[in-house]
Length: 508
Image 1 (tube, rainbow, N blue to C red):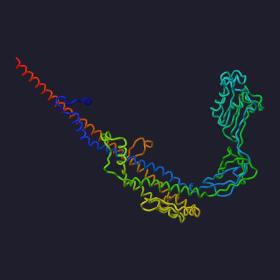
Image 2: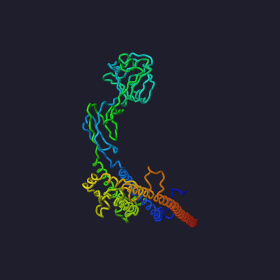
Image 3: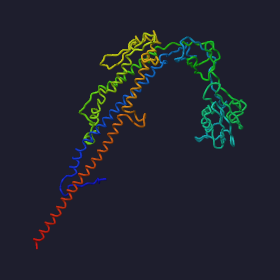
Image 4: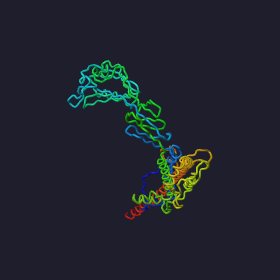
C-alpha cells in the first residue's frame, strides 16, 4: 500500500502534487465514463420499477373485473330500518323477503346489587381486599367462560379490587371484568352474545363472587349461583316460512342477505333485494379511470424529452456545484431515459390491442367495449378510454349478463375469453418482463438477478479494476518524481560540497 503522505518539489521546485493530480484527472476520464454508464442504468432501473409499481396497482383493479361477483352486486332495502337493516351479497337472489325478529341476541352482564365498601384509602391509594371487605388470608375461585377456565388466587393482605379486575381480563376467558369506582360496583360481562356466551363460578369457598343467587351472601353482592352457568341468548328470527332460526349475534347472514337486527317486533319486516346497477357501473368506471392513469404514466415515459448534452456528473464536477445546481442538472440528465423504449411500447400496445378486441360466442350483442359505450380517444391521446355513461347504463339494464361475460367469460379459447381475463394476463406478463429487465424493489427480492443488475455488476467490476490500474499509475508517477527529487538533491549536495572545497582552498 502506498503512503498517503507525499512531499515533492523540495529539491526541484516542481509542484509535483499538481502535476500528478492533473495527470490522474485526465487518466480518470475513461473510469468516469464507466461510472456515468452505471448511473444511467440506475436511473433507468428506477424508472422501470416505478412503472412496474403502477402496473401492480392496476393489476388489482383488473383482478376485480375478472370476478363475476363484481357484476352480481346486489342492494337490499328494509321496510323498517328501526327493526333491522340489510345488505345483499353477490349470492343473494333478487326478490322480496319477510323477516320477523322474535328475540335479540344478548350476552351476560352481572354486577353488584348494592353499593360495596369504598376502595379509596383516603390517601389517594386503593385499599387491599382485607381492608375494603374485612377479609383475611387467601381467597380463591375458578371462573369459566366461552374460551375456557382459570383458577384465581389472591392474598387479601396485598391484592386489591383492581388486582382482581386485571387478573380476570388477562385470562382471556371471554369475560370482561370492571370496577365502577364512582358507584362502588363490580361487574362481569361476556365479550360475546348468544347462548354459547356464559359465566360460571366454581370453587368459590370464600363466597367472594358467587353464592345462592340472592346477591346478598357473597362479598361482591352478585347474583351468581355457584356452579351454575349464567348464559346469554341467541337471536331468534323467522325468515319467510322458515321459523325459529337462531344466531349467536344480532348480525347474521341468511341466503346471501346480511341482516342487522335492532329490536323485537311482532310484525314482519320486508327486505327487497335488487341488482345494484350503480355499483357495477362504478366498478367499470373505476377500472377505466385506473387504466387511463396507467397508460398515461407509460406514455409520459415514452414521450419524455431526452437531453443528451446532460450526462451524469462526476464527483469532481459535483464538488464545484451547489446542491440546487446538482439537483437541476440531474433532473435534465435523467429525463427521457425510457423515451421510445421498445419494452414499454410493447406492453402498451398489447394492452390497447386487448381492449379493442371482441369476445365471441357469449350470446350477447355486447361483444366489445365500444358496444357498451367505452371508446378510445384520438391517436394523440395514446389510447385513453372514454365512457358514454348513458350507453353503458343502458347496456347494464338491457343485458347485465352479457356485459358480465364481456369482461369475465372463462374459457381456454382465446377469442372467447373475457377482456378482463386477457388483460390480467397481459399485465402479469408485463410485470414479469419488467422484473426480468430491472428487478423489483428490495422488499420483493433479496437478490437482484435482472438484466440491468448484471450490467451494473459488470460495470462495478470494471470500475474496480480500473481503479487498481489508476492507483498503480499514480504510484509510478510519484516514484518517478521521487527519483528525480533524489537525483537533484544529490547533485545539489555534490555541488555544495565542491563549492565549499574550492572556496575553502582559496582562503589558505
